[in-house]
Structure formats: structure tokens, C-alpha cells
Image (cartoon, rainbow, N blue to C red; front, side, top):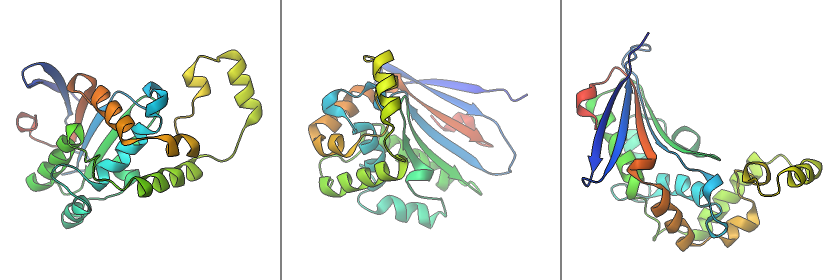
Length: 212
């Protein structure tokens, strides 16, 4: 069995984050790095609805060190897969940012870590084109939602009218998306993207002593 090595570190001397590292040599020289934020659409307030999805989208289009289009160019240069399916997903209970690295090198791993560091507190929310963001989110809604299920909605509403896990879809609908503001995204980001609510997972043949 594999032994997991977990390191703990402090951020600004106050909060603690965990870095589980799972040694794995098959396939050889591959590394998977993930940042998991233990919050998703379930904890969105009404004014923050669609914020989790928005952050997952914005993380790919602009961060502190990777401005518009720069992340894709950097990933392409290192032959790392890029896209919303591969790299960012916001679910009901967690948001996951992932980089899969084939033929891992120090430069590739550093690139992944630098982007994930940006995701933690450097997503560029101010300069984004809100109309393009809304269109992208509505497109995701149309892809993920097969169609209305009125009978199930009524049943869930009856048995659990105050239970968001029954009555709230993890994917915001177009009305909720169009109502979301930059203020709502920032509020959610500040509230939930914290070291104490996140962890990084590294799987692969990597030097565990240098990653935190």
C-alpha cells in the first residue's frame, strides 16, 4: 500500500493548510496536482448564486500572474491539457482545480503550482467581461441540464422545502446567472477561498519536500 505524506504550513502566520502527497510511479513520470476548495454552490447565498461557477471560469481566463489568454499559452508551451473540463470544476459541495502533467519536469510542476497559487487569492474579477462570462455560464447550463423535471421538483419541494441539497441545482439557471454581480462573486471568493477551507493534493513521483 502507498503511504501518504502530509505536510502542513501556515499562510501569513495565521491559518493552516494541508498538502497531502501520494507517491505513485505508475504511469511513470506523471504528476497530478489539485487544489480543492471545500465549498461549492450549496453555500452560495441568494446574491451569490452562480459565484462558484463564475470563479471556476474566471480562473482560466485571468489571474494575477496569468492575464487574459496567458494561461492557455503557458500550458500549450509545456504541452499541458487546458480547458474547463480538464482544469476547473465547481460542484455542489466543492470546487476543484486540477492540472495533469505528462512527462513531468520542474518547470511544468512550478507552472501548475503558480497557477493554483493564483487561484487561491489572485483570480482577476474586476476586469472580466461580465457579458461574456454570463454567456459562457448559460452555455454550461444548457449543456448540463437535460430538461425540466417538474414532478421531481415538486416532490423534493414537498419533502425538503428548506433542504438546499434537494431544491437547489448545483448549476445556476439563466435567471440566477443574469442576476449575479461582481460584488456577489467577490463576496463568495473572500468568504470561502481560505487556506483553512482548502487543500492541495499531489499524486505522482514528486519531491515532497519542495512543494509547499
